[in-house]
View 1 (cartoon, rainbow, N blue to C red):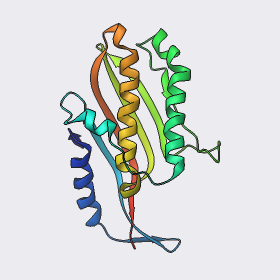
View 2: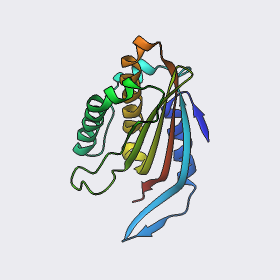
View 3: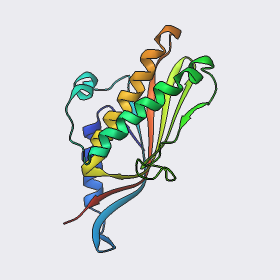
View 4: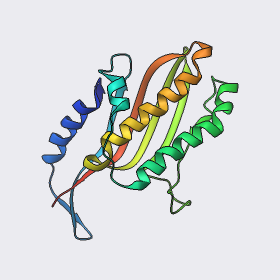
Length: 174
């Protein structure tokens, strides 16, 4: 497990690791894959977080922006449930694919927990393309986290960390 103070640091470490993997071919598509990767984003010591959050980051598909907006909408629509009882485990949501509501999206599950007056965020990612989405998705996680933390300031809730678990981290090979 990585504990990171900068998304680009873990990105470069993962890129090195994935480049050393064997090529896999599925449906005539060549890729490399890391299974079951976990890392923690340490928000207390995060380097240049304001710069990272305001940076224009490349994303793969227009649906990535739509998905980000939908995640914020889910938080906005359900935050009152969390706010009414901060010490429950009730602020959990599972995004669905935009074009197929029966399937969990690649960003499968988000859970927010307050313990010891600190906000923790747990993210479970089913599948993620390292080159196309990793940086953008991590910016999304941190934006979502600070959106919630800002709403909780009146309760004196402090920063903790974001815990990310990715089942399949992959990179297409040309």
